[in-house]
Image (cartoon, rainbow, N blue to C red; front, side):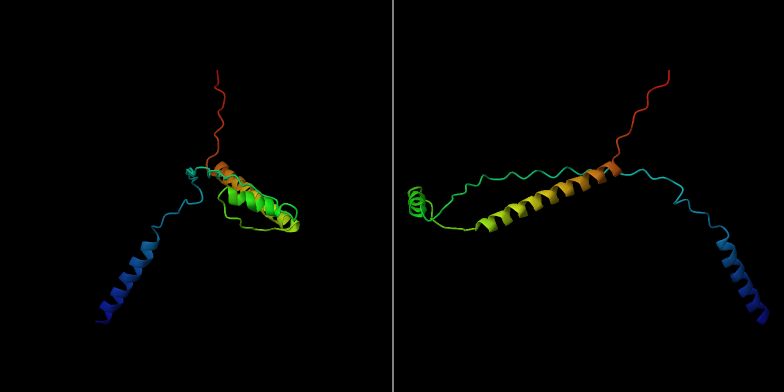
Length: 124
């Protein structure tokens, strides 16, 4: 009985050891894989609606409100000081710069994943 158990352990050990000897070397880092194109369309440039700013000051407030009522518009004020208007302009400039930066990143990804293949002149 003891001999059978030793034989069984020996056969199992040999099977496990010999199973590891047939592992082939992986060539993951040796084989270059072609990059797949991104297939990304450029984001559409948003179409902005035209804004009309009406400048109201103490000398023309009544005239502007009367004209707005005449046109059927509700005379509502959304006010900005000159400093706040400057801040608004800076914020829009930052948004524009961010959008340009994002487009550059997309272009760099596209250049990496979809490089333009150079054509070599034919040999004569």
